[in-house]
Image (cartoon, rainbow over all chains, first blue to last red; front, side, top):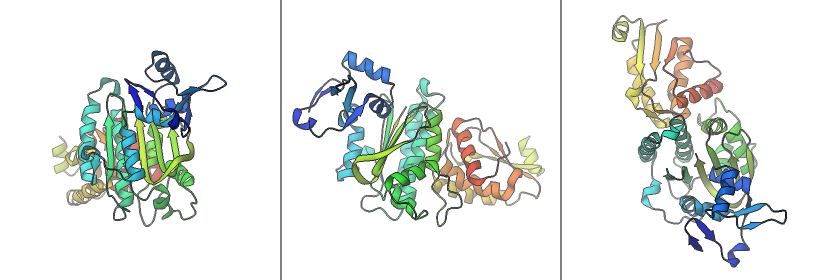
Length: 254
Length: 106
């Protein structure tokens, strides 16, 4: 892999395994507009890996992840392979997460452009992170805790866990669920009240509502499914993911 | 004034910021609810319990569900929420109303 500034040139051997994204998918993941990506292409800041026969720009998923300063890549390697992560990104318990979240809240609160929404961004990150602790307490398959990192310049937050995943935890209270995609849909859309034996589980509906009504984007992966919620959109895009893993991985853009 | 009203038992006012200004996790919400019980034990029947959100920076459904849901189920319209203009407070209250099917008195 050769990196020149913010442009990435991928070797031919790698291109055979690439997962191509359309410009709109790349824009959703990066949390920028399609026009911004077109400008980045012209300026050379981030160019598509190829152009389709019809002339559409196509990006590689890994190229996009690298562009996100590789925080996302670090988290993904951790959930996929259990690779070591820097201690600065690891929260072993919810109290540690809360402390770091408050630190992030202070930094986001200083950004004037986020004045109206920084509290919502913190709440969304808090719900996703605490969901990991609440749903896996006493049941972590191997490594307890979560990955939590953010970049206030690139305006993104990454959260991940090596827990049981949405399907396994939601199936406890909704046994009729059959797949990761189905579970993801329920988690983000269906309000479950009076849940027995546990009362938790509506935080992701809150996340969806906030993302739908604000300039905040979300990519959420669990098991073999992924969900993309574009900024200011109520459309729920759930599809199979390319690299299944057991826990959860979230990228918040703002 | 609020102190006098508290003393007269006209209503009881709780400042949520005394539990913290970032109210996020279920665990902390449960602990806050437990701590509140000693304070509201003296609340007379038919008197309001006022919860003041002034000073809260971030509020989420997990904390809110553990703290507010049992209160609204117990006190109904006697639970009065004040200074709820913060975006995360507003969004959280709307979700909790849907979950509990009980509107909050603001």
